[in-house]
Image (tube, rainbow, N blue to C red; front, side, top):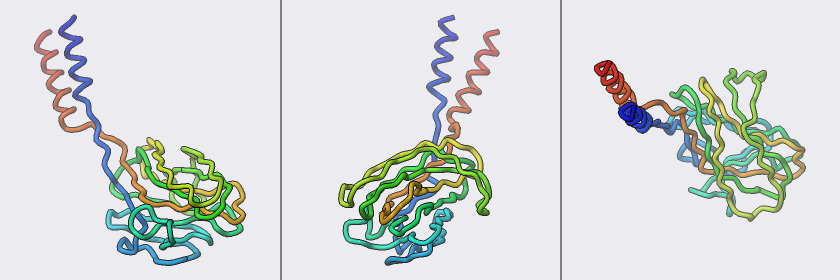
Length: 205
């Protein structure tokens, strides 16, 4: 019995997972993002194949004093008299998303709810979004960048978005250093380990 317990422990330790980076951006000009206060949204495909889209008026990519965590630019949603503004990322080359990590800062004095959402629907305006996390944003700018990692853990053709909800009056939220990780898959070593375990158990019968 002790032998089997040892083998079981070996199998568990062998099953490792590997999540891959499938999308990342700092919203820089070198990646194809506009520079300056650009309204009406943007649609940029970065070198990793991910498509980044901002929807509606009051979405910007550009450079502002104190509003970039890395590089010279960040992206902003809000800052006009409307809510329901968003930035969406559609990663490429992976069947699922495990996490999205990002940093955010108040662009101006803001009171809103920042929703991190995901969907596997086609982005045709009729998609249904599930909310993975709600972040309360309040206060004046200059409070410092906040780092977040949100678990999505969804297989399939997953898109993720930042969505402002709660009646933005004259506030906005900046984003920078966004990374998206794929759903982990068993490593080759794990599969070999399980195969070896099966052979050992078969020979002991």
